[in-house]
Length: 120
Image 1 (cartoon, one colour):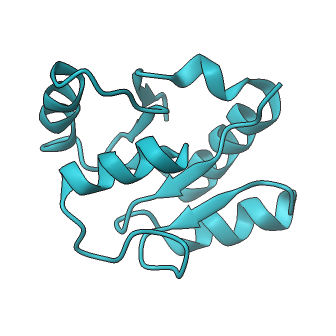
Image 2 (cartoon, helix red, strand yellow; image 1 turned 90 degrees about the vertical axis):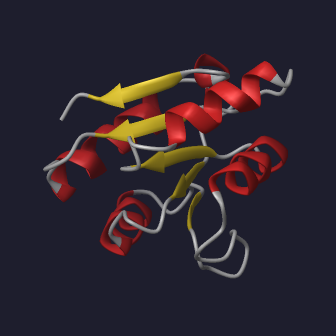
Protein backbone atom coordinates (compact mmCIF):
# COMPACT_ATOMS: atom_id res chain seq x y z
CA UNK A 1 0.00 0.00 0.00
CA UNK A 2 1.26 3.45 -0.94
CA UNK A 3 0.10 6.11 1.47
CA UNK A 4 -1.29 9.36 0.06
CA UNK A 5 0.98 12.42 0.08
CA UNK A 6 -0.63 15.84 0.39
CA UNK A 7 0.04 19.35 -0.87
CA UNK A 8 -1.93 22.02 1.01
CA UNK A 9 -2.82 25.07 -1.05
CA UNK A 10 -1.97 28.51 0.23
CA UNK A 11 -5.48 29.02 1.62
CA UNK A 12 -5.26 26.03 3.97
CA UNK A 13 -3.94 26.90 7.43
CA UNK A 14 -0.38 25.78 8.13
CA UNK A 15 -1.77 24.49 11.43
CA UNK A 16 -3.20 21.58 9.42
CA UNK A 17 0.28 20.53 8.34
CA UNK A 18 1.86 20.92 11.76
CA UNK A 19 -0.94 19.01 13.51
CA UNK A 20 -0.89 16.17 10.97
CA UNK A 21 2.86 15.80 11.42
CA UNK A 22 2.42 15.91 15.19
CA UNK A 23 -0.08 13.04 14.95
CA UNK A 24 2.25 10.97 12.76
CA UNK A 25 5.60 12.29 11.57
CA UNK A 26 5.66 9.71 8.77
CA UNK A 27 3.01 11.65 6.85
CA UNK A 28 4.17 13.54 3.79
CA UNK A 29 2.45 16.91 3.92
CA UNK A 30 3.78 19.96 2.11
CA UNK A 31 2.32 23.43 1.94
CA UNK A 32 2.61 25.82 -0.98
CA UNK A 33 5.42 28.27 -0.35
CA UNK A 34 7.69 25.81 1.44
CA UNK A 35 11.12 24.93 0.01
CA UNK A 36 10.10 21.61 -1.63
CA UNK A 37 6.68 22.83 -2.78
CA UNK A 38 5.50 25.24 -5.47
CA UNK A 39 5.88 28.91 -4.61
CA UNK A 40 2.95 31.06 -3.50
CA UNK A 41 1.07 32.50 -6.46
CA UNK A 42 1.71 29.48 -8.72
CA UNK A 43 -0.99 29.34 -11.40
CA UNK A 44 -3.57 26.56 -11.23
CA UNK A 45 -2.30 24.84 -14.42
CA UNK A 46 1.29 24.91 -13.11
CA UNK A 47 0.11 23.61 -9.75
CA UNK A 48 -1.65 20.69 -11.44
CA UNK A 49 1.49 19.93 -13.45
CA UNK A 50 3.52 19.96 -10.23
CA UNK A 51 1.23 17.54 -8.36
CA UNK A 52 1.16 15.30 -11.42
CA UNK A 53 4.95 15.02 -11.46
CA UNK A 54 5.43 14.97 -7.66
CA UNK A 55 2.55 12.61 -6.86
CA UNK A 56 0.94 14.73 -4.15
CA UNK A 57 -2.83 14.99 -3.73
CA UNK A 58 -3.86 18.64 -3.74
CA UNK A 59 -5.93 19.76 -0.75
CA UNK A 60 -7.60 23.01 -1.74
CA UNK A 61 -10.43 25.33 -0.84
CA UNK A 62 -10.39 26.69 -4.42
CA UNK A 63 -13.73 25.36 -5.65
CA UNK A 64 -14.10 28.26 -8.10
CA UNK A 65 -11.28 27.71 -10.62
CA UNK A 66 -9.63 24.35 -9.88
CA UNK A 67 -12.43 22.14 -11.29
CA UNK A 68 -12.22 23.81 -14.73
CA UNK A 69 -8.42 23.54 -14.78
CA UNK A 70 -8.71 19.86 -13.85
CA UNK A 71 -11.10 19.34 -16.76
CA UNK A 72 -8.63 20.98 -19.16
CA UNK A 73 -5.75 18.97 -17.67
CA UNK A 74 -7.64 15.69 -18.21
CA UNK A 75 -8.79 16.73 -21.71
CA UNK A 76 -5.10 17.10 -22.63
CA UNK A 77 -4.61 13.42 -21.71
CA UNK A 78 -2.83 14.16 -18.46
CA UNK A 79 -3.41 12.61 -15.06
CA UNK A 80 -3.52 13.73 -11.45
CA UNK A 81 -2.85 11.99 -8.15
CA UNK A 82 -6.13 13.49 -6.89
CA UNK A 83 -7.79 16.66 -5.68
CA UNK A 84 -9.53 17.05 -2.32
CA UNK A 85 -11.83 20.06 -2.26
CA UNK A 86 -12.51 21.51 1.17
CA UNK A 87 -15.98 22.93 1.72
CA UNK A 88 -16.23 26.53 2.89
CA UNK A 89 -16.55 26.92 6.63
CA UNK A 90 -14.79 23.63 7.30
CA UNK A 91 -13.21 23.46 10.72
CA UNK A 92 -9.46 22.91 10.97
CA UNK A 93 -9.96 20.05 13.43
CA UNK A 94 -12.35 18.25 11.09
CA UNK A 95 -9.99 18.72 8.15
CA UNK A 96 -7.06 17.33 10.13
CA UNK A 97 -9.14 14.31 11.18
CA UNK A 98 -10.30 13.55 7.64
CA UNK A 99 -6.84 13.91 6.09
CA UNK A 100 -5.36 11.67 8.75
CA UNK A 101 -8.04 9.02 8.12
CA UNK A 102 -7.44 9.22 4.37
CA UNK A 103 -3.71 8.79 4.95
CA UNK A 104 -4.06 5.97 7.47
CA UNK A 105 -6.80 3.93 5.81
CA UNK A 106 -6.45 4.29 2.05
CA UNK A 107 -4.07 3.77 -0.81
CA UNK A 108 -2.89 6.71 -2.94
CA UNK A 109 -4.06 4.82 -6.06
CA UNK A 110 -7.68 5.27 -4.94
CA UNK A 111 -7.49 9.01 -5.67
CA UNK A 112 -5.88 9.04 -9.12
CA UNK A 113 -7.81 11.33 -11.48
CA UNK A 114 -10.52 11.91 -8.89
CA UNK A 115 -11.85 15.18 -7.52
CA UNK A 116 -13.55 14.67 -4.18
CA UNK A 117 -15.27 16.97 -1.77
CA UNK A 118 -14.32 16.39 1.82
CA UNK A 119 -17.52 15.90 3.78
CA UNK A 120 -16.93 18.31 6.61
